Length: 490
Image 1 (cartoon, helix red, strand yellow):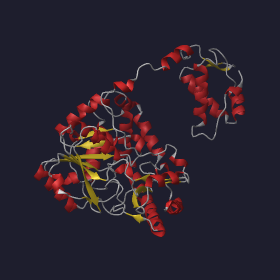
Image 2 (cartoon, rainbow, N blue to C red):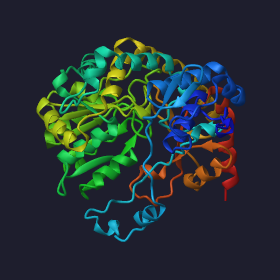
Image 3 (tube, rainbow, N blue to C red):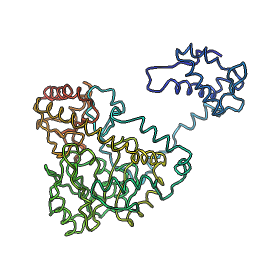
């Protein structure tokens, strides 16, 4: 067999061992290498690939353990007689299967609305100036600590429980941490029966909407607000009203709130303006909720990023009637791909939500829950938050100075920190066109139009985050934004 069948690309993010193993497995499954056929020696293959012999040996041994190879004395390694194989596929049958004769889309009973998506390129790290919101800067995350927790979760003591079907339940270690640590930090005292683990905060919002909104429900949203929330609510009702936000968050328009059944609000860090609602306005909001008998969903998606000042107590902590449903997330404090969040509410409502979740996907993956639980219980999470706060505080200061230097109007009103700025350009600016122009210059921003109800609305606002860009790149990136705006001037 020729070693030329195998080639490694050191420029790829995939490790060399993984690349070699994938190529060997593919060759064995496709029977490009037949059962009983001898592989090149580890020394010969390592020389051809320009890697250490130990790299090849580890791959060979791993394939022995999984049944693809067999060691032979004085003969090296051969393909196992029992190695798996891919079933033979008739190309004519494959062609027939890909020919669509039925228009499935025409059978859809409930066509969805066009989503108001915030486009974030998957290759955002390749941009020089990624002012992109909601993505993790892996330079600030301890991979080794997370890997240790993942290994511990896969240990013999834990594997049986996390590999099983949780059914209605969640990982008790994670639920207990949320109830005894995360919620009390926000001034919320609730037990494990009041907590449901979700696939991120957005999943919690969807579950709430499914249980509490029908075609007659009157819903109030902030203006501007999280685009996906608007899309979720529009699936259930057309009775949606919007209330403007100011430097203190949601304006308490009693005329609108008196017609409300359900209010969604981001009091600690308004999305996207970052305004923080003062305690007195929070109390006044709860008084109006009691007076007009509406429920409040508090999306507290970024409370940990309080590096400028102590975070205000959660709206839920001031709730004496149980009117507030509290939604939390680990996407900003850990990483968004983890897809873990939680909902805190009365035990009876949590049980109904748990039943609905069970029908949708039963429960979030057990390994992710247990790994996160260890990461928190062993103190890594608190260390991660401290590290984030230190770095983000420095980046925010640099970006604020850069915005001031180029004369861009920062409307961000966050009193305690956060990860982004809400910026207002000249009245004539279309931030959507600006975003397209900036991409050509390796700069990423988020145009403001998707945060408003009218999808075709021209907006001169845009969001620029400093969580995903290193400090030294910020001034030049801001300068490119300013120059692009000037080039678009009428």
